[in-house]
Amino acid sequence: MLKDISINVGKEFRFRAIERHLSFDMGSDVSELELLMKAEKPKYFLRETPKHKVTVSPFLIQETPVTVVQYQQFVISTNYVSVVDTCGSGSLWDGQKWIEKEGVSWSDTLTAPIGKALSSVPVTRIFFEDARKFCEWFNEYLPSDLRAQGYVARLPTEAERELISS
Image (cartoon, rainbow, N blue to C red; front, side, top):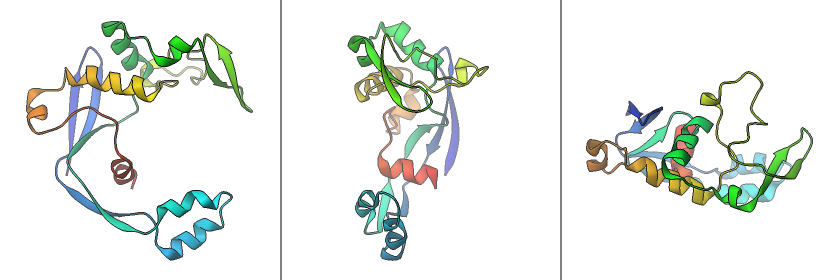
C-alpha cells in the first residue's frame, strides 16, 4: 500500500505513495455526532454527517510539510514573488493573539522554535496560489515513471488528508 519515494531537487523531498485505490468510512454517524454537538462550536460538526464510504485514487503525499528551505529553493529557481510579499505585510502570533505586521514574509522565521534547523521548519504565510505555483514547479522534477502512472504534485483533498491521518 505505502511506498517510500525520495526525489532530490537540490534538497531532498520524501514522499509516501498510496499505490492503489483505498476505501474507508469518512464522516461521523449519529452517535458520534451527539458527542461532537456537545463541543464548544457544534455547528462545524454538522457537515461531518452522514458517515459515508469514500474511495481515493493512488496519490503521493510528502512525509512532512514543505519546509522554509524547500520553498526557498522554489522561489530562488523561479524568481517567484509570493502573495504575502506583494501585500507588504502579514500576520504574526505574539503569544496571545495574531497581529498584522509590515514586512512579514514566508521567509520570516520569527515563529521558528529556537535552535530548530530551517531545513525542518514548515513554511508559513503562503496562500493557495503560492502552493499551487510550488506544485507546478515541483512537477517539472517528478520522475517520468511516476508521471506515467498519473501522479502529480498537488495539494491533497480532504479525503486524502483524512486517510493519511487515520
